[in-house]
Image (cartoon, rainbow, N blue to C red; front, side, top):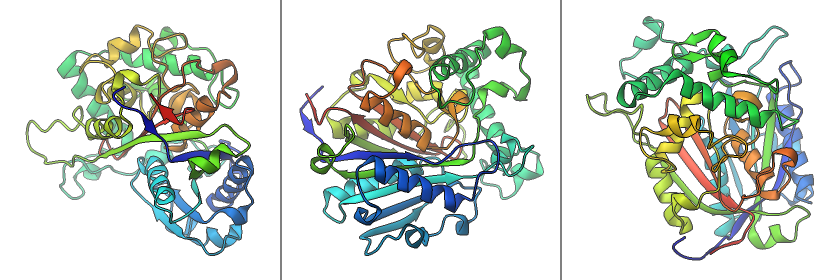
Length: 395
């Protein structure tokens, strides 16, 4: 580490609604439940919250998580209120903006909440959450006309590019999925805990090559909320504070020109560099990662983009067991999006809070000193990250 930094903001509360693959309520109802749970976890009354940030899924309608959630919760005289939309990077952005608002004195305690109900009926599958065409070419409507539908197809194309450039393999994608499953087996909250072998993985059906079923996230209905407050207030709360040290964003854009390679050279590189610099640390100081990994390739690429292994070697790094339980760099210790549950950016954020608090039970990682948490929206288009720690001062 290059210098000592002292955190001025922290995560003081974490709250969940019920989570299920069946209908369990509206987005609005689940969000209210999660915020109330987070406030109680932080030792606050709802009336103590003076900031509210909302994050809905890109597939949800605006009225499903309206600003009027303030009234549902009985919140008055808010100093900060916004509904944010930066796709899968939004949850981490909420934490960033809440921390900045607290540091600048706009508010004292901000609730950040994500809620979604992508599974609408008793036979609903996860595919409904990714059914929309994802524009990559810039030619209006081209993707839908060609049957190039959903995030799975877009990320599969990106994974193919990595394979072509660096020789990464299907077995390396499988190794990432297997590591997530091993972590999920230790997490009572995870949805997919059944042991899985490489043979199981390779025998599973393709969704879009090279992605098999186990390369894809597991959507659920539910909500997660966090309470962000000042570091001084968090220290006096009932839960161990999770201090926010560094943060960064990176959004490269797409030129559509040859040689741009947005599938492998993403804004995560910029986001990580800014976050490390703001926290006064290096990538080598990170002791665990909680990645936004809606697809296995996103986790492998995250290792490379955030400087945690050499370019092109993310697959080999995972195949060597480094991200699995007992590995030198634990990744997505709750099972992540693939085996834990997919509630977008709140999945990695919630696990980071649990790990930083030392509340992970059988999956708790001893080295929780500096946790990298990432968000990723579009098809590797929008990137955010935060660095959190149980230590207020990084030395």
